[in-house]
Amino acid sequence: MERERVKDQASGKEDPLDVLREAHALLKEGHDEAPLRETPSGSSVGASERRGVRSRLLWIGLLLILVLIGIGLGSRYYQHRRAVEPGGGAGLNGQAQSGKAVYYCPMHPEYTSEKPGECPVCGMTLVKREEPGHPPAHEEALPPGTVRISPVKQQLIGITYGEVAFEPVVHTIRTVGKVTYDETKIARVHAKIEGWIEKVHVDYVGKFVRKGQPLLEIYSPELVATQQELLLALRAKESLGRSPYREIASGAHSLYEASRKRLELWDIPEEEIQRIQRQGEPLRTLTLYAPVTGFVLARNAFERQRVTPETELYTIADLSTVWVLVDMYEYEAPLVRVGQKATMTLPYFPGKVFHGRVAYIYPQLDPMTRTLKIRLEFPNPGLVLKPDMYANVELRIEYGRRLSVPEEAVLDSGTEQIVFVAREGGYFEPRRVRVGPKVANRYIILEGLKAGERIVTSGNFLIDSESRLQSALQGMRQGGHGGASAPGPSPAPGGHSGHRP
Image 1 (cartoon, rainbow, N blue to C red):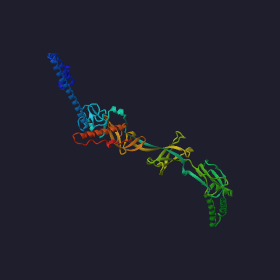
Image 2 (cartoon, rainbow, N blue to C red; image 1 turned 180 degrees about the vertical axis):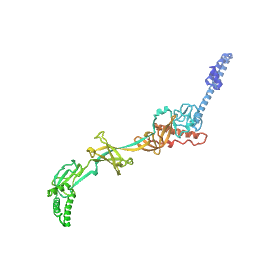
Image 3 (cartoon, one colour; image 1 turned 90 degrees about the vertical axis):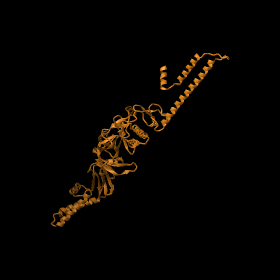
Image 4 (cartoon, rainbow, N blue to C red; image 1 turned 135 degrees about the horizontal axis):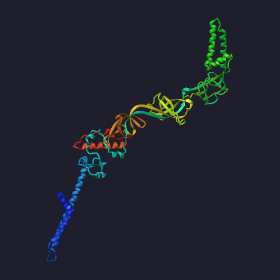
């Protein structure tokens, strides 16, 4: 006890309690040594003196206590004034001395302290800053906005990494299409003569017919008269063709050729004309045959019906090739070209893939859906593709070998794109990049990165906030030194403000 008292006296500090204890000891010694003197009034002189000494010592102790309390309050007020004034001491813009931990207020980063506690401005608990106040030389050489994050903090905020890849990039456009008829393979059957239908061979819609199959038979007086002219011209040719007069022989031959040509123009086959000439008499009816192989889409031919050249008797569609109409968004239109290959699958035929190509790109957009219609052409072996079927269509866009990064790695502010590159020692560098089209869940990189670089794919928003805070602190640190406003380091590219995914 005596050793501690001597140590405190040597350091120049006195405890008020020790002062009171010494006063009490002196009072007790005076009580024991003072002789008692009786007064004529019967009071003791020693007791009166002791009371006076005790009172003086009590006042001295109280005065010392009040002085110490005043010194403590003044020191507290002085520290508070230095904390709120800019550039007012070690607790503000300056960092702690080398080798000591530094604590700062998250709400007021300009306040720092060497000890944990509360912020005198807002009362928030101070947070330990792991970075030293003055970065080493290699850190100062890093690009502006580079921030260091410890492995523990990286794990807490969930940072994940990816790699800049240089590989073949293929973009697949998926859409829904509808199967329809090939309009170039639809045939409409008309009779080129006027007459009446005697017999109908194809009598219902949807029937499958082959090219050259009989459709109906027509009786036409004009057709019968033409056949008779052909027979007369044939006899005249045979009898007058050996005439010594060339004009007579030539006229008979010309009459025969004109009659024969008229029958050919009425779509009477060569076999029928040969049959008329062999029999030597005209046929009562003319048979019309199917011009293509396909299905009957429409029928307007009935027995005893009068027909004219304007009457459409049948409509036949050849389904050996079908069209598929698809809609694509206007931003996908520049990626499609005529002749490009396409694949198609249908839920009716699981596992079967049909291969076709882009046949035509329509010149106008749909004003309601803002989509562009594209026509694809697919072969139809076995006639399994039926009009009005719905199908899933895919078009593959080949970009070749390109640099690409995951979509999550790019912070897009609208005016610029930022990617954080992971460097050695826990440093993260904000890198401005120029991106190309988005392919699936990756962006093609046109400028700013190299193949094989390690990048951040998750947690980059928190890294961006830390980078902006670090840039702000560096700027204030530069402005607070030397009493003059020195230009601080430039912030990270674009300040990383307002990023959105």
